[in-house]
Length: 239
Image (cartoon, rainbow, N blue to C red; front, side, top):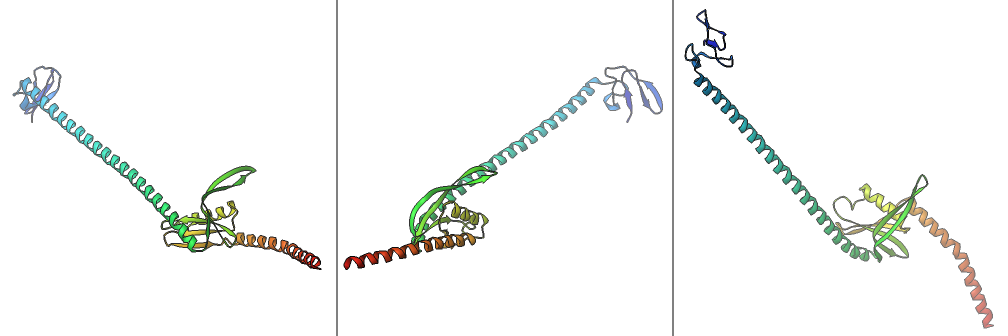
């Protein structure tokens, strides 16, 4: 294709150098737009306008596509967040309803096991010290029950994991309740399997039993002496 330089430049055609007419811009155009050796400005303008229109149309379509993608992404993200919130709310309500039903069932289970219910949702707590600074810990026991003169905290659990002693959180909770409420033992009420588990906490329960035995042995001699003195006074009184 032959080219003509506008603005005093030259055009190469068949090895000869020809002077081109002067025009605005000094740009090079294809020879077929120039109408031979003379520049056809109308054709040039049409060519430039068509190029600009096509470029703007392509740019506009690209921006429309990007805007559509962004809108779709926003809608998807909003739907995902809404679904997540609804799912969490539904899960929380389901757990609360299951826990309430479990506590109602637990009362029947502990009664069947021979325990007497002393209190429900009993508040308690204890104080721990960190470098000498006291920290008050507030707790709430599901049930306080008794049997044969001994008091127990009964903790009700529902679900797949919590009712098992394999669950570390459950073990720690029972241990804390045992210490904080000053009871003689703890019970784990499995509302899923409908059973009451008496949990023995090793040396802690052994120490409590030993302290109880010492207390019992300390008042037995006094009781025996009192019985003897009473019997003696009755004997003297009859004679």
